[in-house]
Image (cartoon, rainbow, N blue to C red; front, top):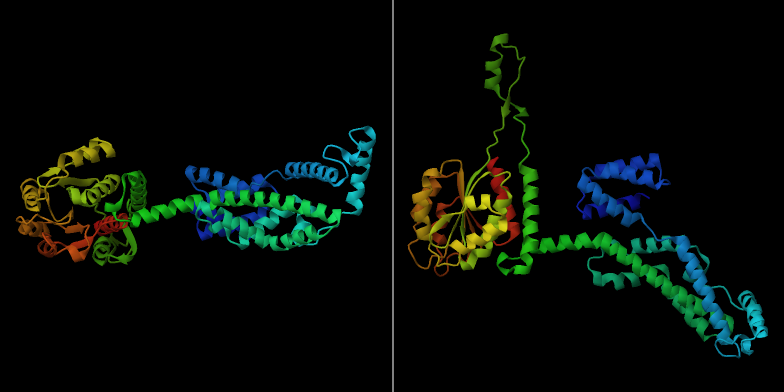
Length: 484
C-alpha cells in the first residue's frame, strides 16, 4: 500500500499540489493508525496531511476520485454473465442440424425447444474443457476484482504512469495485456480452434470474447491513467517548451499560453521575494550596538544586538525597444514587469522606436491587453534611433536616477548607422545602481552591421542574451536578489 500512496503523491505533484517528502511520511504513519478499510476516513486523513489550502483541497478531491475509484464490479460481472449465456445459446443453435432460430432442427415447436433446453447444460458439463492458460483461467474462473488487481499490477510493471501523449494509449494497452499473459491466451485460442471437438471450439469462443472484453477494460484503464498522469504532465511539458523557444518564433495562437506562463512565473517570484525578512538575523552579533546598549549595566551583556538586514525594494526603469524586429521581446518583458507590480511597485516603463515615451500610467490604469495594444500602436514599428531615445531619456528622466535605481534596456542596439550617443549610457552607469542591457540577438551578432553593442556594453554593469521566457525569469529573479 505504501507504493500506492507514493504513486498518488506523484499524481498530486503533477497536478501542482506541493507535497514534501516529510508530508508523505506523515501520511503513511497516519494510515498505519487509521487503516485502509474505511474509505471516508482514509480520504480525510490524506486530505488533512497532503493539501493545505482551498485550491489544493479541490485539486486533491478530483485526483483522489480519479485515482481510487473503480467500476461497479458486481453490475459489470452480471452483465457479462448474461451476455455470455445468450451467446452460448446462439452457438448451440448453430452447432445443431437446424438453422438459426430453429433449435435442434425441429422447427419452432414445443418438442424442438425442449430438446434444445435439455442439451445445453449437458454440453457445458461434459464437452467444454477448462482453460489451460493463466490468463484464460483468470478471465473465466477468477473474480472481477482479481482481474482489476492483475491489471493494476501490470500497469505498474509497464509504468503506465509515464504516458505522455494520448497516441500512446494503444501502445500501453498492448503492453499491459502482454504483461497479463496475452501470448499464452492467444496460443491456447489458436490450439483450440484447430481442434475438431465442439467443446474446444466453444471454449475458444468464450476465451475470444473474454479477451476482447479485457482489451476494452484495459483501454479504459489506460485512458483514465492518461487523464490522471499525462494531462497535467503534458501541460507542464508544453510550458517548458514555450519557456525555451525564442519569443520571436512564437505565433499569435501561443500568446495566451505564454501569458499564463508569465503570470505563473511572476507568481513564483512573488512568493519567493515578497516575504518580509526578519529585521535581525541570529548568528551575526553587532558588537558596537551591543556594547552601547549594555553600558547601563556596567558592561554586562543583558541585551544582545544582532546585525540587521535591510530590505530595499528596487527602483526600476525599464526601456523597451518596440520596433518591428524586437517587438515580441519587449511585449513579454513589459508583461513580466506588469505582473510583478506587487513586489516592484516603483517600476517606470518606457517604450520607443525613436522618440521615447513613458507608459507607466497606461499600465497602471488599463488592463494588460489594452495597455500592450496601445503601446505597440503609439510607439512601435518605427525606424529605430537609439541616439534619439537616449537624448529623450537624459532630458526627461536623468534627474530621477540615483544610486538605488536599476535601469533595464531591452533592444538589439541596431541604430541604422546613426549617432549612438554612448556617452549618455556612461552617465547612466555613473549615476545608477545598475545598468542592465538585454539583447535578444546572439552575442556573435552584437558587432555585425549597424549593431552598436561594442560601444554600449562597456558602459553597462551587465549585458545578457535574452530571447526566451527562461532568460527573462532569470534576469528578473537576479534583479530581485540584488535589490534585497
